[in-house]
Image (cartoon, rainbow, N blue to C red):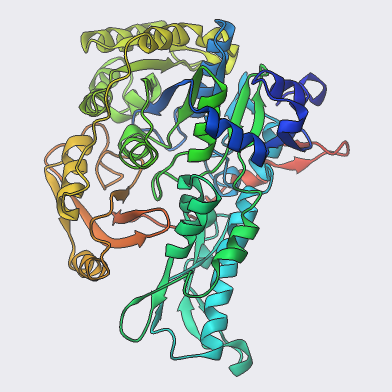
Length: 541
């Protein structure tokens, strides 16, 4: 974390994007883009090229994708490029859990990192409040008209890993406390409000999406929406500031627009459409990332966000590490494990090429890596016809990322390819999930459980069966089984349940044992955090 005195005033960061102090709303060392600024940028349109940073299948600690993204934008800036990062906001769940903070690391961080990790500008708290206001309005409606709802499907949320809130009973304590029923909580980053806000393209679009949120069913098994409960205006009011993208800076003072944070193993895993559009209007090159590996965030970035928003990347960076290859290849001493584990990288390269895109490999370097290991990875990458460069952004910041930046610049000189998706919107749900399973995961296909078939039948009766698909799947494997490492073959993905995220505009296909409310590990990262007498937060990993 930078010393406060070393950070640029946020007004100076804004100047790098040709923004004045009147174009932003300051939140201490951070700022939000103002509504007049966003309207002006929309009229201006995009001038920049979009770079997607994604990754191979990670180990449980991650492979440094955010650090690589920040190092890359710093490397581009060192090479004279008007570059800006467009990244997600961290969730308190990972910050206090096993993974730690989500602002990069070392010499490639978002600043002020502790503040961004803990509260940023309060966006996730506003999303939590809007979600829970809707829950309160649902139960209030039931209190005054118990026949209105046959089933409630809307859950409350909290921005914290708390496994004990997965299943709850509410309404206890007699008639004054409501009608008792089983309920539960989701983590805020997995809530439908988060996904809805991130895919919204302005106030009008946000309200239309909020009105479509399905919260339960009536006695005739028809959906009841937030619009039916007259909840849209008050929810939008709570989200008024949260809808504005945040302006921050990297360790080297490069502008970063940080906004939205849906999980990629549950939701679509990308920052907001509004933030990406603003960045493309302000910078010549915009570096963005999608959560976890390409099979999750990358696929959803292209098939969901880009399809809905009319965006498309001009280059894709695939983050790889010798550490992850060794883990996927059997975790044995020597080079054989790394060579075997490269099969995972090959699968992701093939998936990216399936979208008509050519990846650049960013080999993230760790202290424990030997030159022999790194040379092997470079040899294997070049044998696949892929450009590769080492990235030491964690240790050296932009200087350590310049080699990757040079490859990205070369890729951006080529024409942006036409969009190519995994499936057509006119395809059936079954064909959509099978196409993702085959083309992106390397599976034989996908099958639906009996419960999933029943879910889908109801959604089709509501006219929602043709929406695009968001796959909820483990991030630790290309399959739906976290124990299957590397590049598994001869497997079938099983969809256990199908839900609708009507506000976001997609069907959620749940596979494996995906939980929408994670738990803390035995030794949570929360044990490391503290507040000094000077008022500084320390220990955010």
